[in-house]
Image 1 (spheres, rainbow, N blue to C red):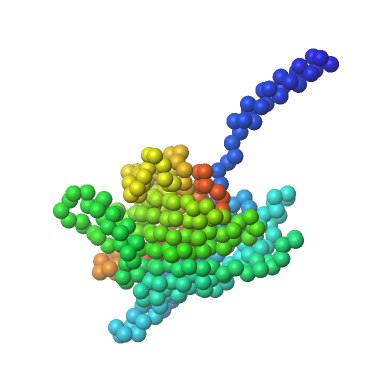
Image 2: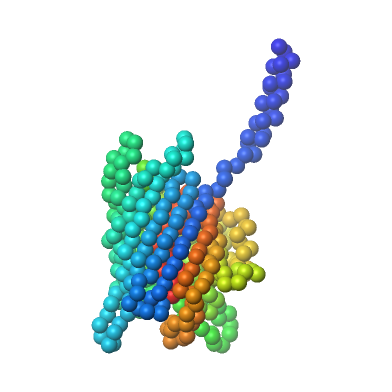
Length: 339
């Protein structure tokens, strides 16, 4: 019996260090989007974006149907409008069964000045177990590619263009697209522990470098997270008709402070393998049916069909934050994958 006790104690001693070194896998959210955009050639037709999101707790599909904004006869203005539908299920941790939980409803309209009211979107929650049905509206607003750039986006734009200029006398291309978020509340994906997240900040796409630069603040469950970083759009290596977004968003640290965090990488892929607190993602985009359109007076070739897929990964960031960012990207499909 004594020998047996010594053997068991030794076994426990060996297993304890192994358990101590075991690490919880980082929170990840898979992302998919199929974008079909006939409005690039015919403004009277509607674009569709089918977005799928998935993680260990929630599976969601969103469907956006968007009409293009345009002006006819230089007078009559038609605002861009996107109807949003979809549903989601929560994952039963005991048996992995999918339980229908959320229904997305409503939509949003982009006014001529870019203002977009978020409160016209909502989520209906179906009863599951002891939790009854309820409804939660989105809140806050966005400004999507406005004709007059907001103060916040203009400041970020100036920082980006100054960095790109880097002492040269003249930029080749000073065109930018901007997205502003003003306390945009994205409700819970269906779990009572998920209280939803509120996003503020700016995103600027610089045509000169074909990169998004992001300066975002999000509040989830009463805690603020400040993210800065970039998302270059590049050709996928050795793959025809495929491009990719490589997102790097970092939290403040001693190594990365201020506006320098916006330009943390010189290589599109290197930061995917760096260990930093924040969120990274790679989204590959298979492109087809290219058309040439006018973007701010410049002929620009762009795909009218995009099949995107990728994964968002958080480091020392809760799953709810990663999931909310992936949902935000889904709602911005027209801006991220369209023109």
